[in-house]
Length: 165
Image (cartoon, rainbow, N blue to C red):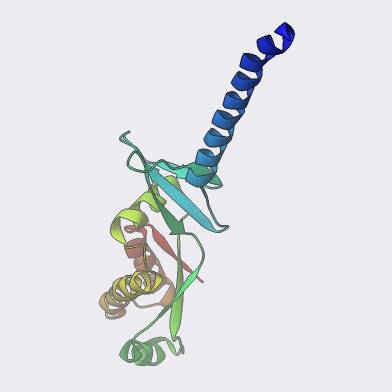
């Protein structure tokens, strides 16, 4: 009987340790955020530079904030009057252009700062307005489609995007 009394504190400590370990595992699981394929997560913490994560990370509330940047190709509709100008100047029927975020740390951070990435519709509207303005400005000065493409690509690179043709 005396031997059994000595085991009770050991069994109690082992039970408490296993409960604490399960609690830590449950917290880790609830704070772990996975990154879907074709996206990059930007984790902002108390450091000056944000962390770019491609697989997943622990994101603790209040200490960290996270946002995802989609690296996939996004088709952007061109306004109908620009489509007509394209057809007149270059004999091309283009109804949309495709853009994507350049896969570099600097460009991903630019895209996150300059374009709202929370809502896909809002992102597409912002990209559409930037692209249509850039194309409209360059239509009068560009003599070839290659020159137009290069100047529009330069404009898009300022916000971290590139044309995909």
